Image 1 (tube, rainbow, N blue to C red):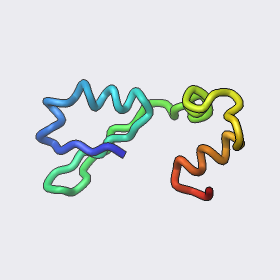
Image 2 (image 1 turned 45 degrees about the vertical axis):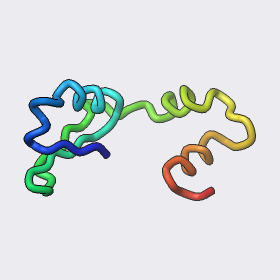
Image 3 (image 1 turned 180 degrees about the vertical axis):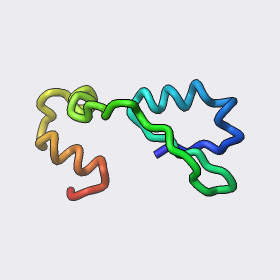
Image 4 (image 1 turned 90 degrees about the vertical axis):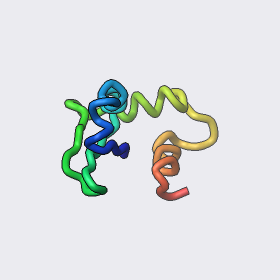
Length: 75
């Protein structure tokens, strides 16, 4: 998850919107405390994103296993 301070938001708004459009949530902080979250309006299509990264049939391992490993899960 990305973060931006309230001071950074005005200067980095276009970058924050790019992150959100890509499916990221952005926490807005003030004095190191989260005061807001900017979230995508719709849930991203994780399967489509995974297929874009690893292809339709990744070699060696099932796509679900690759995703779990990328998330820090089982190996």
